[in-house]
Length: 206
Ligand SMILES: [Zn+2]
Ligand SMILES: [Zn+2]
Image (tube, rainbow, N blue to C red; front, side, top):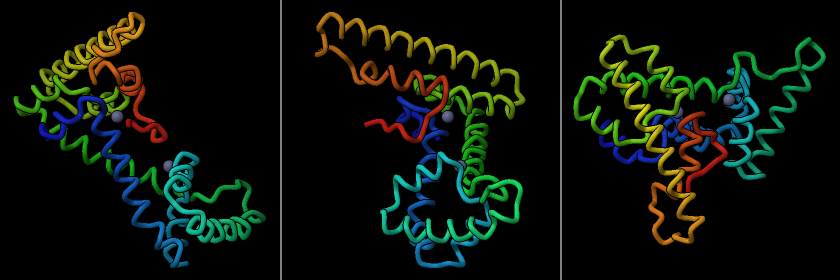
């Protein structure tokens, strides 16, 4: 875990792990949904998509694949539309949101356990740390007072580090010292906002 965090200089490991799980699930499923009506019906029964994950499907699927999936979905919608007050495909919420919630839960459990190790805590201080939405979720799980105090202190340090990087980036840009901009400074404007509010799947770090 601390090895993972050392690479996570720029972003919340929970946000990015979850995004890659969602992506993997979509990559693995699109062909099945396209070619197997029973599997497609299963997905619809499990919840269809929210608008964010519908956009993820559009981003990953080809027009030909999505056409097959959309045909199945729209037919199902047409069957239901007259018989229900609320026009919604999803019975249990979004299929991918459910996967996302499970993936976030399992990595938060890993982090919660790893926090007991000094090596992990050292690596955590150096990393970007969790975004604030995931930090609050983690804080709700952590019972030890010293670990809660560590998380608060670490987050304060990480936020101040981002503030410094954003300021030095701006200063170097304004004074034509572009060549002196470090990699951390270069992406601080984006990673600082993600640190505060979480990562949105539509945005990609280059
Ligand atoms: Zn996050
Ligand atoms: Zn969703």
